[in-house]
Image 1 (cartoon, rainbow, N blue to C red):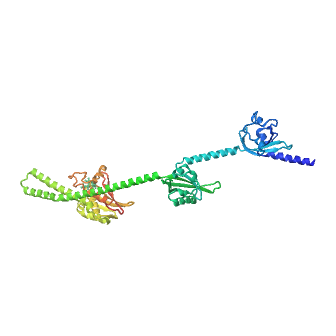
Image 2: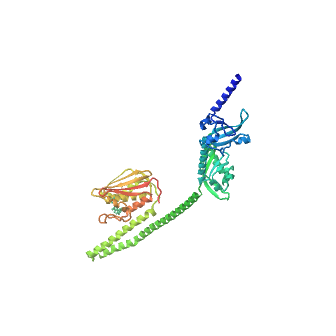
Length: 495
Ligand code: ADP
């Protein structure tokens, strides 16, 4: 009885194990009955000991064609296969020939639900297919390189650019395919050392000798444990870019050349013009002086025989000759600024102003002008021209005075990299629309009867200032006086 009890207990434990197993376990007879099914099986498919398996599982009258279970009865060897159950789920099936206690032959079958695993595998495959097609879609040659510098994978574009089939590329040294092997090695070494490289220039050599300039961008990639597994490198073909750049450079040089040529031409023609103005005005002076002299002699000789009309004509002639003389000497002076100017040097602007005022002392006294000046800096300037500049501006300020006696103020302000001088007066002022015109040669706003002059003074000022790389302009309101400004670079070069 005790032995019987022991067997019972053993059987009980055995069936408990089968019942708790998460896989299904069943026994099948050679004629398709299922005398035993564990809990998992029953839960999934039910339990019908008096029906054949294909009947209760698939509602069939014949065994399933795809069933591999019964092959074990022929081979008497375990068999492993995959089965899709009536619930549509996938099972890993293990079948074993099994001898029952009474010696009859059975099949022991175990099934494990692998639906989730299969789905995940499927997804993984799809994902890797997807990434692969992304890789292949890239026009840039892509390659992965192992830490010892061997190619582990390539994209189609790499095959194309090297002319070497994929199987031959994989396993060979990355540096084999470049004109500069050492540089290539240095490139992947740096990627491994620093984690990445950007725009690393290399030249790929095709098997047929054709070269492709590329820029490599590479980053390391890691395995699931986070260890560096290799680098992923993408090459960008920059041949076109290089060609375009070279072309651009060619154009730039050409343009520079043209500009240089034009500047030279311009310089030359400017010089020619200056020369011409100088020669013309210089040579015109002599005959003009003769004309003026003889007209004056004529007038003296004819003094008594002239009537009112002819006296007037004679006066016109003398006047015209004199005016022409002053125009010509103005022109001469203008043309000399460039040709006869001195090299600029450190010049005390206050001293230059004093010289200008000394030259103007008569008109200052006669007009009762009050001239005041801030302390002025030393600037890099042709000293003669600086006092000429002050002299022209101050004499204009006196000439174009209003009702009040002239008050003139000169000052200088330091800007970023220049000095800005100003000469302010309380004279008649200038209509803003003429503010630029007055700096052109022979341009004046008044008749000679109103204000004498030739219209050369300000154009001389402009030429002097520009020769020292500065600017000159006026700010004024009619009736409210004018302020003339000019700038002098801190230490400028002259033209
Ligand atoms: P000019 O003094 O011989 O006329 P400029 O070239 O020196 O020649 O001046 C050109 C014109 O600019 C002058 O005719 C005058 O109309 C105007 N102008 C120059 N300076 C002043 C000033 N300080 N106030 C008003 N107008 C001026």
